[in-house]
Image (cartoon, rainbow, N blue to C red; front, side, top):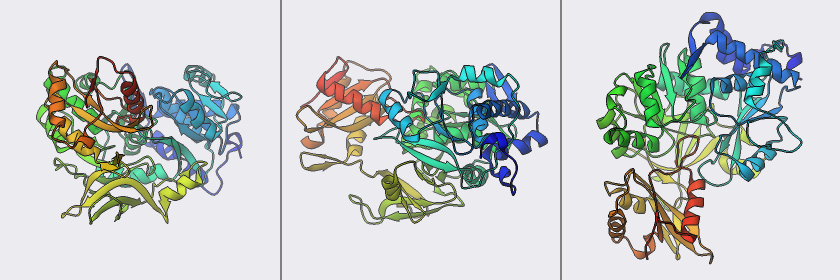
Length: 514
């Protein structure tokens, strides 16, 4: 069945995500703001109009139920219309960030066999039609008839998220038309509680699970509006968005929150600009209590910490909105179940976190072995090592597989990182295993410092001297910031490449130890 012949069959068209997010609001609140950016805004009615126009273009291209459309484009209001327009036609949208390039992009794209690629970059796949977003927007303005809403079942595939943007080979997590409504009904309504008048800014880009929620379906589902950052996600941009445009909900990740606190302390950002922010949230990785306290001290924002994953679409634990505290990951979000199973290398009572709930992915596309490892009787293996707290919440200990074996000895990278960030000039640190040209695993530590100093090298090696020899990095790679993925997390793939190059070809920014 194609979208061009779509009719409502047994009410199935109402299950289409594009219908859920837009149709009812287009009737009840057509003039409400839906999308805002630096230079303009769209109302709900205007967003729906552009979504319908995009759907017409896709239908004219023969795109229909179950066809895969690969979307790789910078964040923009048009990105949202493209995504919802393809979904309206019943297509499955494979989302990839702008940082995915070259062989990695081609391999990932080939795996899903798209009917159409939307990208303004180099040709992604031979033999597959590719169109850039600007041309697509021009076609959409030619008044192609609305193909209607393609009727779907709730368990039909809707979109795919590229996972493992920070570690290892990428996989595609398949999500259905039921997943996003499940996110809205759980974390959206029970924790986030956005309301009309809210304007949400997200550090994570739209193709990520975190960015898709904060910049698209959570605001639309609650009658709020999303700020679409079309320039950069530097702290200076957030200052402008809050002070000038009225952003009052901010979604960041721990690495980015630490960066914001540094910018305020350095005088590059005015902490008073965030006085009207009513809600600040974090997810994606461990939020250290020191980062929480630094943000509270410099900006007044008290972060509500959460935990989720691309495979679950959603956030399934959260601290309490209204009374968040430093060092807390929070409690289970209503609608989800959590359990902890034993894992190697952690103490009794701790282990790997498993989650079950209404938004867990259907599968990894084309990878039944990985799917079998990730899904166990409805339970998703998150890979997070956690322990229960006396109050019923959980505390994150790290990631399964983070421990590194060097010289027949297991090394905990968190110990190395803790030593390095103890220096006041160090904002963040990451310890990685790198295999050298002789096939030997070496430790390399990357350090982020906003203001490198001549004496920093000696101080860091002095600090590392307290560790056993096997735990001391072979090389230190120093820069002002660590590379990040589209979701704002540390990009381990890129960092590994830099660390490998540093180990083999040292530069003036690389310091060698023993």
